Amino acid sequence: MERMEELKLKQREFVRERGWEQFHSPKNIAMALSVEVSEIVELFQWSTEDESKALNDDGLAAIRDEIGDVLNYLVLLADSLDIDPVGVAIKKIEKNRVKYPIGPKQINISNKKL
Ligand SMILES: [Mg+2]
Image (cartoon, rainbow, N blue to C red):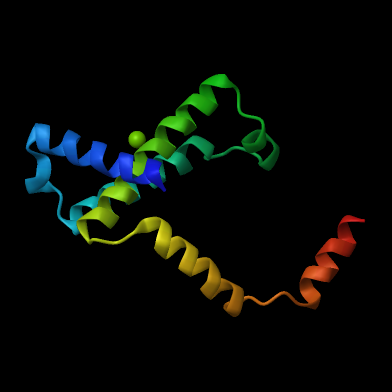
């Protein structure tokens, strides 16, 4: 939690130093976030399932950079709307527990692995 707050404050400083607040409407940040997510997808484009699980050092470095971009824009978007991203993510997991209860299907999947 403290690191998320640190990240948010660092982003505010970075943006303020450059005078970029004028460009950071929620709409623009959401669009930038979408582009950064696509950059992750692009890194995996045409990879097989196995290749996507066995990235070399350069591939991992590229993924790390893009995950950083995605998280930065996601936190920036949340900050622009005064949303606590960790809080809403935890709430969403709880909603999904109700929406997707543990049932027989999960047992069948487990049995297939045996
Ligand atoms: Mg990027």
